[in-house]
Length: 63
Image 1 (cartoon, rainbow, N blue to C red):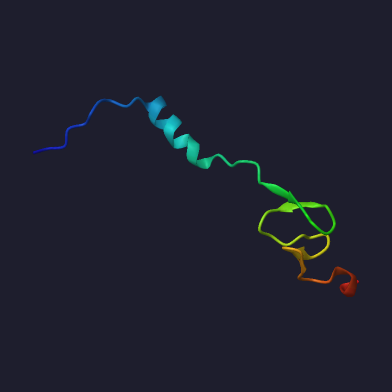
Image 2: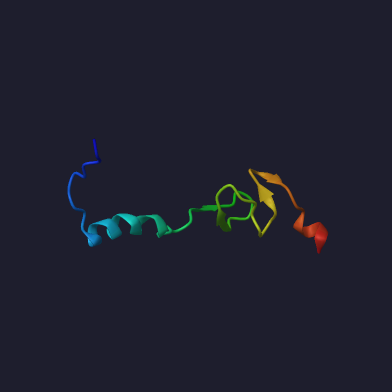
């Protein structure tokens, strides 16, 4: 038995389906609980150096 295609898929239909994988959405930004700056979720705040209400890097100490 050989493979039986269900029907012809046009180039435009095929390419529309493939085009969805490369689209990149806008990253989700959250507000820092300490300083109020926006940053990427699940990352450390670059402004104050805190993550999940804990100070990871003390920015005042490094200056």
